[in-house]
Length: 335
Image 1: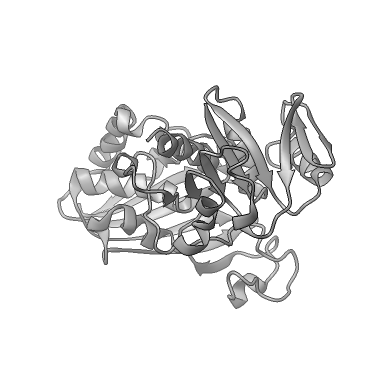
Image 2: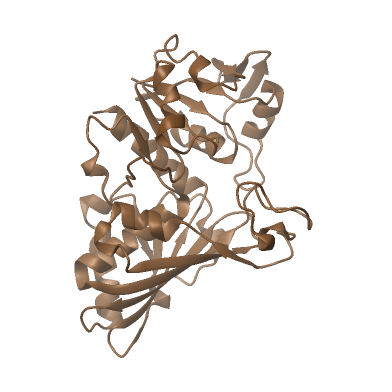
């Protein structure tokens, strides 16, 4: 039984607990968050995107009580003071968005945890993604980062295109649902992203902005270094995003050959549960709670002059990411 603690119980922390709660070989042993248990319990039980969670959630002064099981809630600002040794924590999910470098995340190890998985790109920490390069995780990797939801979406597509056809260069745009750090009305830009476009009201604007997802992808796929870049456009939807790729390939292809490569990949054990394809004319809400990192929309594949290729891939940027974050936790914890 793998003993898991969550540091930071926001959108990703809560969704990851839901994604892992019914896994028989996972035991959540503690949550660290400065918010009162009463509020955490309400936000865990009820969700505007995923609706009511089909588990009973209660609370007391120091616990969440899920299906009658008490889950300790800690409110500690200093990671080195966290009781990870007391709770015999095997893996900490670091999902505060604050401790995103090796030095800061290593404080969890000092507190007694055996390993740390960061739910964001992190400086000085190796990037591992399920299906893409998770098999390269080493026993000596005490801290790993699982990158972002967008990186988890674009890396499988890029890997398959590189392996099947070879990539000369590529660009991507993530058409991305709003996130908590955006403003509801025009206000000061968020601290984590001092971009004046992100200062604007999220629910009435399309917001062009930056993304680190392409760079993070090249950390998992170094063969794409200096060949791949991208941007983001935040749009007023609550969940589900769309990766829009433009590839210049090393060989001439047809639409049928590109789609066949993705269809073949879905049958491979490597990509099982990570990559899917859609041949039905769907829209974003149809992919809410889809567990895959990336769902290629085969109807939208385009090819110009044989080597210029357009690919679209859907992803639930909250649920899909959290499912594979839990997969990474289990993989790291098994080493």
